[in-house]
Each structure stands twice: as C-alpha cells, then as structure tokens.
Length: 128
Image (cartoon, rainbow, N blue to C red; front, side, top):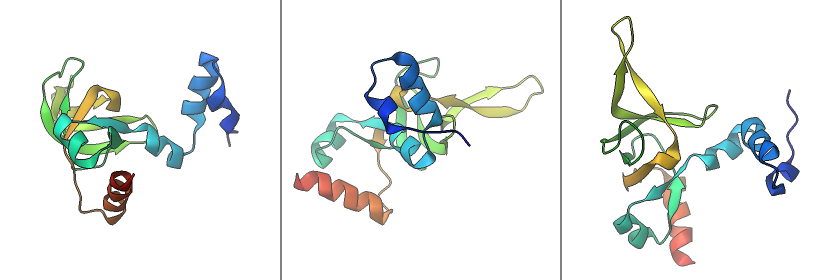
C-alpha cells in the first residue's frame, strides 16, 4: 500500500504536489473533484465552488467539447475525471464512449439537491 502524508500538501515542490494528488486516499480525492458554480448559483448559495455529483448539469468551457451542456453521467475518483453526456467519441470498432473531462474545465449550472448531506453543506456556507 502506498504511503500518504499531509506534509506534501504544504510543499512548493511541484513533484510533491503531484505525489500528494496521485497518492491521496479517495475521501480526499473527492474534494479535488470540485467545479465552479455559475454566477447566479454563486449568488444564491454564496459559495464559489462545490464538489461535483452525478446528475449535476454542467457546461464544458475548455477543450474540444467546449460549449457542451449536459448532465454528469459518472465520476472517476481514481483518475479525477468526470464524464458528461454529449461528450461521446466514436472508437475504432464503432462503439461510442464518453470522453473524460477534468472538473476544472466545467461550470455547474444546475445542482442536484436531493442529497441531505449536500443540502446541509450549502446551508452551512450560507450561514457564514
């Protein structure tokens, strides 16, 4: 099993920063999958970003799928990528697969609020 240390986070050495992100346990990688909220959601919830969740509606703002609006289909914590409906590519054998996108390249336009924990998190942020 790989060793993990929180001391890597405070280092300014880029190699240690990559090591921190790559070897982080999944409960810490969950925080890495945060994306910016749209302007109206930022005002409404008084927070700038929030961790992504399956079902959120996002808009891709960087890359070859720029401008695509779709729902988050699935999230890969290990690779730190999300898969958005409408960003499918055709493979050589003719099948279609979703293209992995880094969460920093999307903006959240609609949140799924049926999760009790997520609602509580947003309420905590509004109180501050």
